[in-house]
Amino acid sequence: MIEIFKSGGLIMIPLLLCSICSLTIIIERLFFWIGVSIKRNREVIEKIFQLCHEEDWDGVKKIAAGSKSYVAKILLSGVLHRDYSPIKAMELAAADEIYSMQRFMNILDTIITIAPLLGILGTVVGIIDSFDMLGTSGIDNPQAVTGGIAKALITTATGLSIAIITVFPYNYFNSRIERAVKIIEKYTTSFEIDHEARLTDNRSKQ
View 1 (cartoon, rainbow, N blue to C red):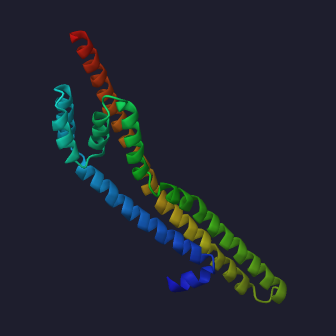
View 2 (view 1 turned 180 degrees about the vertical axis):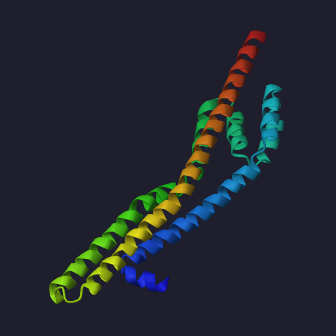
View 3 (view 1 turned 135 degrees about the vertical axis):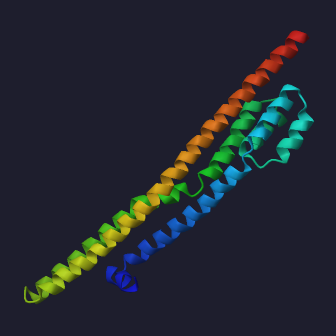
């Protein structure tokens, strides 16, 4: 591996940094989503809706404050601002949660794009050096020229490998984010409908 790294030239240094950065982010995001799955508790969400229907706001605050579910946090924000603008409050809370889910995704996207380009750049530079060698030594030593081109292709293979390995977890994380957004929309819409129904019922009683 060390010999391959040396053969690739200076371009292998940014490619190495890209691979380390990609691997670090992938591991961090995997632990993040594992934590999200562990913290998600559907029974807590159903209990929150039940307490909201009963207008037991203290009970909602108690159960939601003790939960680490992102949905519970968003619903709690709506409950705390129920007399003013619960929908806007939940939108702000949801934006914060989605932002944490999208963390580092732009870096992975950049790595997927730039790693192959760096690899191609390294290959082009290597081919230029090989042709310079050809112009200097002529065709007396073709093995040196073809060997130089073969080494130059190492950077392209490395860049493509980094991009391919990164794109799969990147797409997986994006699918998890899309699913989380749909879940947030589902529960916030349910809260909005239930809230409007309570307001209408209270007006009719008055």
